[in-house]
Image (cartoon, rainbow, N blue to C red; front, top):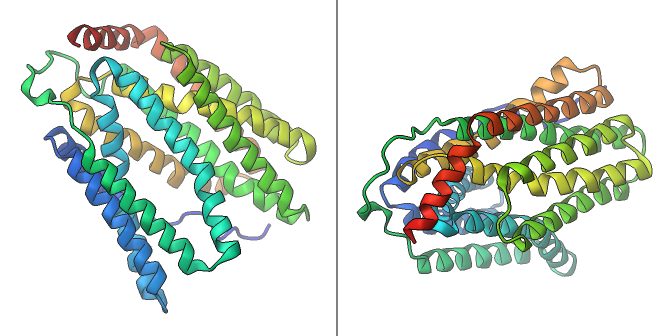
Length: 347
């Protein structure tokens, strides 16, 4: 088995920074963090564009990591404190994330085909500046003037279980995103089949997020368990047959499950803690994504006997989400609903 060079081997430096971002968000600085994060993203792209050696690229990667660490948890926090509209704000944010993951590669790929890398980085700078402008126009809800909620610690059952669920899902998903292309390459399959797999997964993920938006008041636990079961079915099909038409079908199922699961877990986790602690909660929750992406691939490839076996173990990791989400129903879902109702009554 040849070594796959894309497997992460170092700890992402932005994970620790996210915790600081959470504390600053809880103090009312989320808007500033989003603006600053967007500006840093444009600076990183500028460094890539003017680089003629490795050093500026390394610096750009560091700046880009800080940009993501500032913007992602601050934006999730901002959506979570929208009072009675918090659930829908989180859903819309998730939808924009899914849309960006499809539109971005398409736009930048087209720019590269008709121009150069300079054009690609110029567009990325424009997008980042636009993000900063939109963030400046955002009006942060004045939750700091309201009495703080009594009770309800940060590590509530819904938050903890949803965060751990995210960790295991990302560990499995990120591993498959590494090892499935590697398996296809080893077996001599065309890059088109691999590209179709991940493209279809992204499209169905976006479609299921759209379906959540269309539902007036989706029950987050129900959509989370549905997404978990669809993901498990999709990944098990991938593990049983990672090539050909079956793999393409499984990509559609797994993508639809992911699109239901991700925003549902965000709603469960963040609405399960008081508003004045959701900055820290957003940072810890998003850091679990990083940890899953960091720990999953090297751990799974170490205990597996090859790419095919690694895909099977990845599917098993995803199955762990189901009992954790079931536990949310048994332990903490009532608390999440009560907090959501309280937010609606305050409007």
